[in-house]
Every structure is written in structure tokens, then in C-alpha cells.
Length: 198
Image (cartoon, rainbow, N blue to C red; front, side):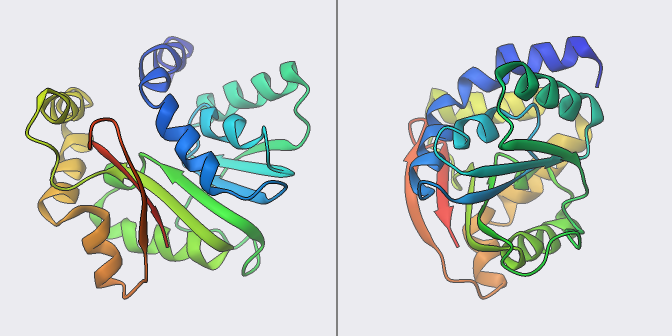
């Protein structure tokens, strides 16, 4: 992803998810350590950084990680760090290393065969796991149709992963298949997004 794409991500995607990020932050205890998976340019990590003692953001997109590091340095947030890391292999971290792990709007974009591994790794390295993603079914409203349109614009592979996520019942069905206990913590964006604690 080039610098123009990083800028467009910050200008177009990040503002749409501001309330969702705050809702995730509100579920995370003050002074906790946190791992933010698929952190992108770091917007959720910075939100968490207002109350967490330490936050590690990981992503495979090098330009996004670079942008997040530069932003943290500029703001003097030395309790935030960002690493290029594959979410399917968090072996750098021991079991329950973090108080919380978070993921925002990431699971739907991963290939179906990776979702369970990513969720299990996130749960392994954290005492609490909070995930936000699309609600299934989406509301039959302008907001619901707009969400589907945005995913269509994201490209064939991304949209294919989203359609599989949606067709197979989203996160709640994924949690049931994995035999994980979970609770719905919030519904946001006119019912488009959900926040779950595992």
C-alpha cells in the first residue's frame, strides 16, 4: 500500500469507524495491556492508548505500520508500539500475555480458512478478547446496503471473503462452531456493526 492509499484510508475509512473504536475502548479496563490485531494505520491502538498502559499493534501491511510508528513518535506515545506480524502466528507472545486483544473490522476480510486460527491465537495470548465486525444479518436499510457496496468496492478477493463471512453467519456462528462463549457488548452504526467479548 503506497502513501496515497494510507492517506485515503485515514481520510475515508477511519472517520466512519470512530464510534465503533470508542465502543471497543469502553470495554477495555483502564491501565490494561492490549494487543490490537490487524491494526492498520493504528487508529484503534491510539484510541486504546488513551487509557491502556501499553498497546502493541500488529499488521502485515508495512506502509500502514510505518505510518502508525511515525504517528506514535510524533505524538510521543512511547507506550504504543507497532510490529509487522502475521495474526495466524503469535508465537512471539506467551499464553495470556496481554490483558486484552482487540480486532476491529478485520475478521470478515480474512480468507475463511484463516479465521479460526486467528481467533484462537488472539484468545490464547489474551485474558479477554474483543472483536468488532459486521453484524449478520445486516439491517435492510441504507446503512446495510452501503456496507455491502463498500465491501464490493474493496476488490474481488476482499469482497469474496466478506460474502463468505456473511453467508456463513458472521462472527456469532464462527464462535459457536469453535465452542466459544461470547456476549454481545454493543451494536453500532445503525445495526451494521457488532462488538463481541469472547
